[in-house]
Image (spheres, rainbow, N blue to C red):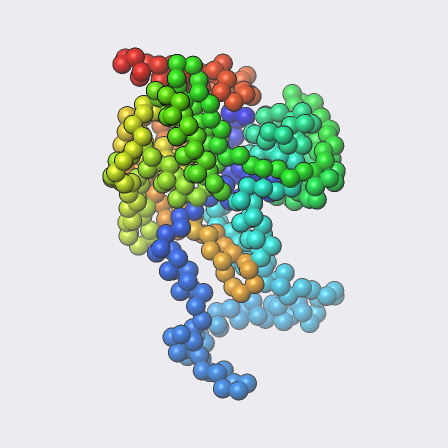
Length: 420
């Protein structure tokens, strides 16, 4: 699915809990910051333990006092609620509520189970039905944007553009999509009832869950020796697979490359850095600014694949996709084709918290292209604008040149190769 009237707010492979919509920055400064936050305060000699007595500093005491209300609430609930409660669940709820109060859709808490699941899902294998879903919070609908090859969804005839309407007895909206995802996941060989809408008509399916392998990169050689790579997300082994695809196309004599980042919601920023470095000599890839005004630059190294480039983006190309596009647009002669990108120009850090395996994701910085262009809430403007018509749902197969946006990118590349 290439085009919808709403904006992409959440993209996930049925088991992927919001990772794809984050731009995570694993840098040493962040590791140090979070390691410090997880270090016992005894390292700073603020705690003195003697038998059953613990003596803390005034600073530490005053910090604990700020949370006295929560402790009172916990005590009242434990003593007076008419049913038994689970203390761990209450604490998870308190942690989640604290981050929810920031009112940032990219900042949230992972329970220990969710955090472990997130890392497992990043490896690219899970048990489910094998579709990629976009959730649109302005309309509330959830749309299938990709069907994985060989998956139960493909065998059931699910198509890009189908609206996820109902899972078992749950009517699906953008707000409860994760609940639907949890239902569709499960043990391979078990069945799940899923209803889609296509052209306003309900299409009820019964699918048998299976192990799904997520391929994040597809490639082919188009006519006239034009290489074509579609990168679906920045996760797992995507950089390694991208490099394999690029090297294969170069060895086959590719004269130019079309890089398709449409509907790519982002992911790990180090993957964007690695891929950008394949096309750049030494110099800036992007830079980030923290709330204290500190700037941190990320650089490419010398040595690049010297191919004419055309980059395809759309309104769902976000975060790491925009980092990569911005770097190549600013520092190479790449031509960007499509429509204005999503405009997610902020960076998240993902870190474990506590001692029970929980985690959190926190927005920590804003990023800019090498030329200093702001991306957040703006996006990247294509050099050649090509929008799909209102009556075109964008349901084209991989590499189909009747796709108006890919077709235009192909024309632009032919012009590049002919010297026009």
